[in-house]
Amino acid sequence: MPDSSSHESSEAPLWGLYGDLRPEQIEAIRDRTPVAFVPWGALEWHSLHAPIGLDSIKAENICAAIAERTGGVVLPAIPLGVNTIKPYKGFPHSIDTSAGLASSVAEEICIQLSDEKFKIVILLTGHYPPEQIDALEEGARRATEATNGTRFLVWADNQLMGDAFKGDHAGATETSFQMLFAPGSVDLAALPDREVTLDGDGIMGEDPREASAERGERQLAVVLENAVPRIKALLSE
Ligand SMILES: [Zn+2]
Image (cartoon, rainbow, N blue to C red; front, side):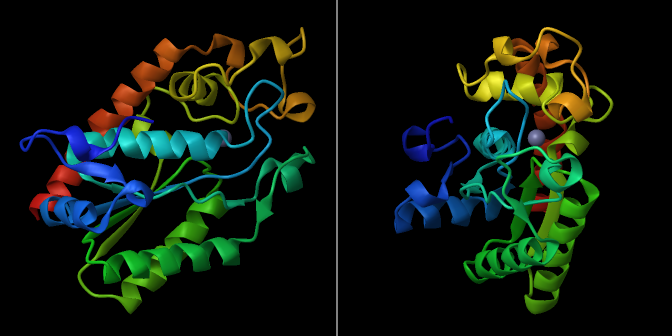
């Protein structure tokens, strides 16, 4: 996780991790850039080589990297994954969440951030089955009805990579992000010495043994190329 805003020059975007900031720091950031990022994650099996919190770690670090360039505050990741691989394929250690709970939490956080005078709230999810996206969209829709003057957007990191890199589950793409954001947290040697599969290993996508931190850097660069101009355009509306 990059450092917060306290050492930035007056010209650089002001940003910070919401929970680490004092009131006057939040106000200084919000006055300049009224954007709040809500990283959305999960606690979910990511095969034998990667940690359970991968989606949260990924979302939080991507939000921080965007905020570093646009300004804004980044909330702690919300680890409420809907339709995890536990009900889907029976893998353990996942904490599965109902869509209704995720919608309600998203709605309440959005309403609170609007009440705190943020004009743009981005729910950026690292866990992105359709049921998860739908639940967050529903929360954002209800918050829109309940508030005035704040825009709520639901993004998923795979949507921010276009055709350059394909979103996956514990495959080479997610594993590359994990190696970039939390060096030492991936153990590729824990994988079985054979081809990996969804049913056998809980892996969807390219073999994670193709992953590297360097690929994670390239993935992040694509995410930033797509996300940063969109936020700057929203701010200038
Ligand atoms: Zn994941």
